[in-house]
Image 1 (cartoon, rainbow, N blue to C red):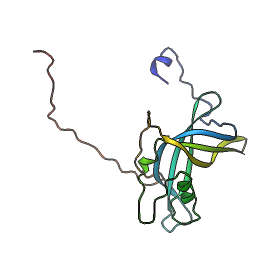
Image 2 (spheres, rainbow, N blue to C red):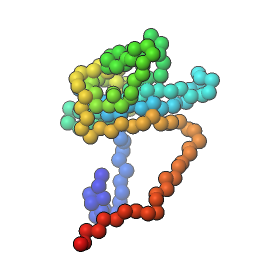
Image 3 (tube, rainbow, N blue to C red):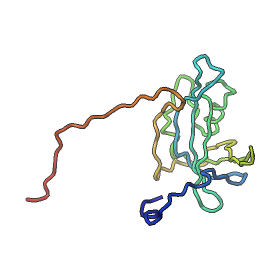
Image 4 (tube, rainbow, N blue to C red):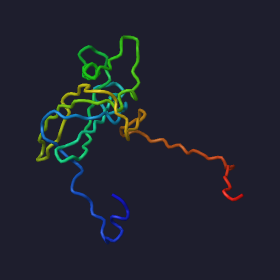
Length: 171
């Protein structure tokens, strides 16, 4: 939404829902974000679990871009969801090796989508992701790992140098 689209209105209307579901099926998509986040967990000793979160951009039947997410707990067990996901994406590192999350961003994928209805609302879920092609990088940015849980927030202030170089266009 842009300001000039609403500047003549006296009311700012809130949309009914940002939730957008797409039909069950297999879709071509692109991983637009890869990050590690922390989520609450009642099963871990410290109350948190680390999750690999992939945002996948998919084009629906109407040509609209829809963002869906795939989450996998970080675990290197042979049967772990994350290991299966990385195998399907052909990005599972060898033992002792590492993986740069930014290498996943821009990767073309084939996403299998299934819908689930809960409390009268339909949710589109990514059931599986498979690599489908080469990297596509237009308009996609890498998001560094961040903490997302109800935890104490810490903010930092970046100070700018008071001295700035100015370019004088006049001769």
